[in-house]
Length: 162
Image 1: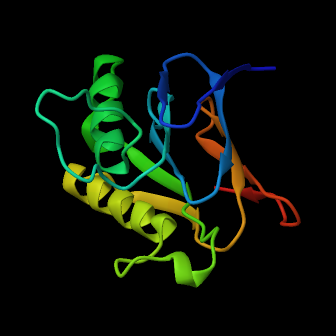
Image 2 (image 1 turned 30 degrees about the vertical axis):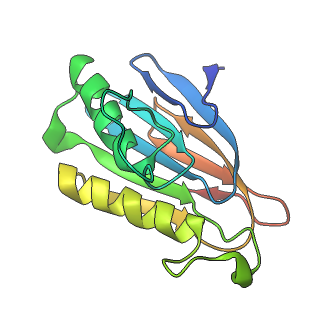
Image 3 (image 1 turned 120 degrees about the horizontal axis):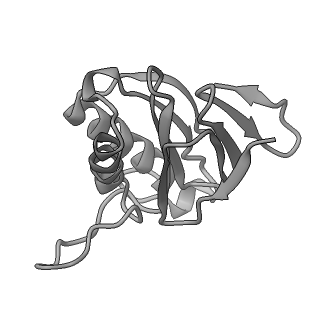
């Protein structure tokens, strides 16, 4: 049995040993997994919001914001021996958890989180190889860094493998 490491809301973790990175309760939040299949090193972020309303000079960048999470993980993954050209990404979450009247003119938080994740991946040149996004239900993820497989669990939904 692999060691399990929990990734909380607004956190990211990178693992160079074979582990299972887990995150729970992705509603409108997005889980972003990055993986180098050759060295079997991966990272998982549980992002809360697409981007800060305004950037504050000197503020610490965290995985709270989807727009920063990819860069933060890539930086750590490269230090662990990953090659940027081998990195692949998987996404899950970004659900519509509230009634449509609570959406802004720019869409719901979930939709905006997914869009921000795709933009960050494109900007970094990382291909998106699998995703389970949208819908109206929350998800939990189990990312096995030995295999690169993510198990997506949701109430009243079949288990999905990404």
